[in-house]
Length: 278
Length: 127
Image (tube, rainbow over all chains, first blue to last red; front, side, top):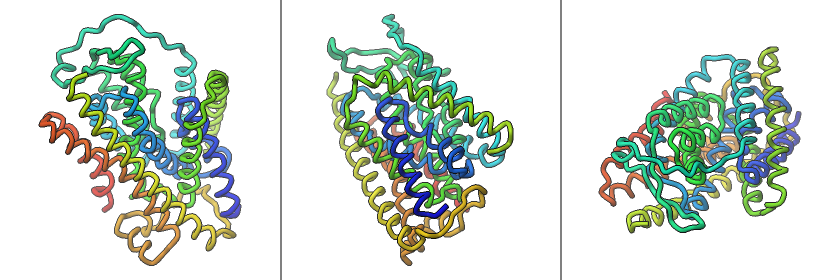
């Protein structure tokens, strides 16, 4: 394939990934790696390096908008980043020693799990949470705007949440994704942080987590400019356009379609990983 | 919301805007490199099926800067990607300063730990 053709096709595919990722809130990173590996037969390590770069671009690019809404909790984010960044470095080192096939299988399983998570309904528990002593010591409790005015919340489950965050970091460094789904799981389910606060704080953490492994990927030669360039520009442009266009009516259908795409890609990754084609 | 929370948020919005500017600058550099790259190598054939690792000129910060100085398209792209990787690192650095201004020393320490991990990844592993 010529450089022209490869660059154009990858940029278009990445644009679509970023666009759908922004509209559905599922993030574009998860489809970039399967797209490169399955469609363009790019070695999975190069694909992961390129994806990491695009994850940083979307997370840093959207940070201002998220903070302005007043949901994200900087202390929770920063405290948990000590877990995700160390996890990300561990994940990047693991990626160096395991085979591309096993990475593909793990990637497929994570895709299936993300699709399952996004299909579940989220309901507010409504039960007042007692803040744990550790959460108090770390000043994690906060407040956020709701239709009924500013509401404060307490945080619990700091230790299991921290452990899950470490795992999210490992997955991020191993697979080159934002691991937004696991991050939200840790905050929303384990630490009982309100869902809106969890999702926005997660977005704010994703860029820092990805940067922790991106440095290692770069110095090991996993970041190829010829691949990362169309991916980064495409995903960034797609997510910017996606964030501008408000097609609220169709978001439910879109989420459904995107979830189906993720399931298909997940199965493909597992199949190709097991048969040793990736 | 206490005035402390509000201050937190105002600082974060300023940081967020700086980050956005950083991403846009990085994207502009990558785009510039991309145009040069396509002009010079657009008709080359590529194959990324096998992982060979990128050459040394694209793997460390000094080597990338050297390539930029001699106007190598792929080095310019890589420099743009380095700028991008630097944006979250800059955000953590700004947060550390913001926590120090609030005299929240517990969080200054926590933030510096995150910063140390990030710098280790980018600089410490380059050897």
